[in-house]
Structure formats: C-alpha cells, structure tokens
Length: 240
Image 1 (tube, one colour):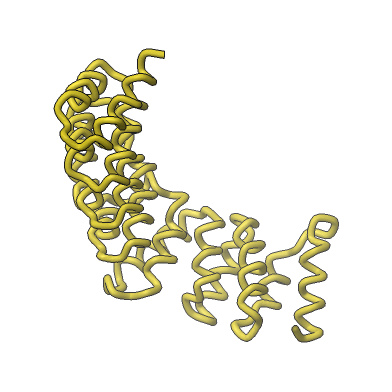
Image 2: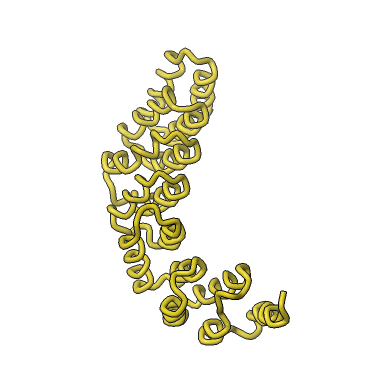
C-alpha cells in the first residue's frame, strides 16, 4: 500500500466525525487505486444520494463504467441513475460480463424495472444473472397475477441448477393461489431433491386448504421414500 492510499484509508476512517464531501471523494478517486479502496470511495459516494450522483455521473463520463462506479449509481437511488443503468443494460449485448453488476445495481428499483428487463435477466444462461433477475422480480411480484408470475418464473423453475430453482420457489411461496401451489407440487414430484425440499417447505409456508390437500395427496402417492417423508414433515407442521 502506498503512503497516499494509507492516508486515504485514514481519512475514510474518520468520516463519522468529519463527513466527506462528494467533490473530495470524486477528486481522490482513480482507477489506479487498489480495488478495495476504489469500492470504499464509491460506496461513500453512493450513500450521499442526491449529493453523490452528480459526482458519480462525472466520474462515469471520465473513466467509463467501472464496476465500482456502477455500484455507486445504484446505491445513490436517484431516478437519473436508474435511467442511466437501464440504458446501459438495454444497449449492451447479453454476453457482456459487465451486465451482472448493472442488474445488481438496479436491485433497489425492483418494482420500477420494466418486465422486459426482468425477462431478459431470467432468460440469460448465467446463474448469477438469473438470480439477480429473481431478486428484481421479488420486488415486482405484487403487481403480477399468479399466471404472470408463473410465466416469469418458468425458466428458473426448470433450471438444472438448484440455487436458481430454490430462489424461484422463494419468490412463488409469497403467494397463496391454487395455481402456485399446484406448480410447487409438481416440483415436489419432478424436481431435484434439493428443489423438492424447498417446494415442500413452500407449500407448508403457504398453509391454505389447497396447499394442505396437495401435501396430503403427495404423502399418500409419492413412491420415493425421501420425498414422502418431506411431505409428512410439512403436514405435521400444519397440525401442531
């Protein structure tokens, strides 16, 4: 660590007693600094909200879409920053590795993100992109019908990677519609054992007459001992 970086870290450590100004943070930022220090400076800028965005915007113009600057744009939670991030995402190809940090930065605006952007994330082959898309969807879900939500989640539910499937199930389990419970019951039967476990738990959390009936049927019809035991576990929870 250079002496200059040590001095910057020291100044950051004193920020509670002596608040940092956005022009100072922007003035000391440089792509040549260590990655950890760049992220720390940009985090401080993002937390300055409307005072931080003009400086972030200027840095983006000077240095390009550095990942830490994209993160700061998300943290500041300004509508202009949201629009810039959306433009970045729409204008970039799907295989652009920098797309992920843009999607993650948009997370705080989940309910305001267009459905087309969320669909693009959910249809991306990358695991992290799909997980980020499900995070966005979780904020928008309350605006969707059960059938619309199932359509959004369809690809994620059928993903071969358990983390994606489980994340999709967690979005679905916040709803108690019969079609949601029926789709979860299908995962209990046909999904991986990890996905099935999450789907059984989701049916238990939903706790409606329809979900309980599905658990009862599964406990009686499943041939796989492990899955049948998972169904019985959730049924026992229902009647405690």
